[in-house]
Length: 120
Length: 110
Figure 1 (cartoon, rainbow over the protein chains, first blue to last red):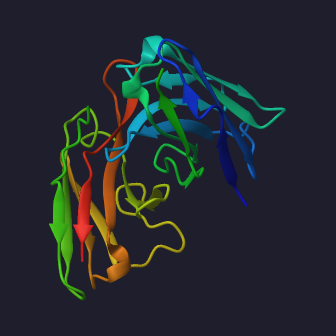
Figure 2: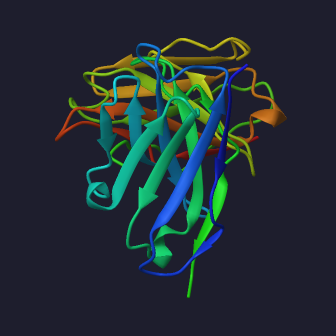
Figure 3: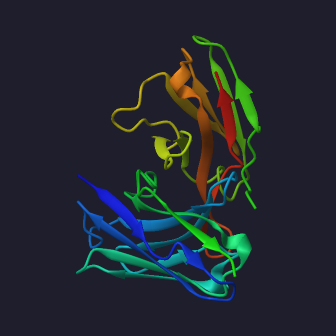
């Protein structure tokens, strides 16, 4: 059974760096075509894709946020970490991580999400 | 800013059929697989359709989807009260280095 869970601070100050961890079980990030992505959703707004890291260490980022994002994986610990620099109140959102099974089968399973607020 | 356009809302009465459209371009829907997600109030999104028109195990066959050119659509037949949710289309976009894009979202009211 595949599970994912996000963890990290619930409140960060403007200009600070956010570090979120996705802890997963039930699959290996070494398996071909597998990936873990991050998606966020501001309160009352639509989903926004942030980044993905694949089994082969390839990583892709949202073009509008690329300069602020870094995604890494620790296969031995079953963790994926997303860092976002220079946080702004506009980055207040629920952040989700999700499992990617293949090119046609993106984000089939999601974590519960974690709400991050940005405020001084 | 979403590059896939959906109608903000759709509605129907129990038992009716509702269709949601998703308009994109050749760099996303036109050349890549489309997924559809359902988000019930206060919960994480759930994959409803993958590979343009395939249902994951457990998704009722009341949900169906299709793709034509640079547009896609999701149909819900035999509408039920528990279908009241937000629905998002999504696809990979080949522009720049590649990224995944979601639709603007459609709220379905039963």
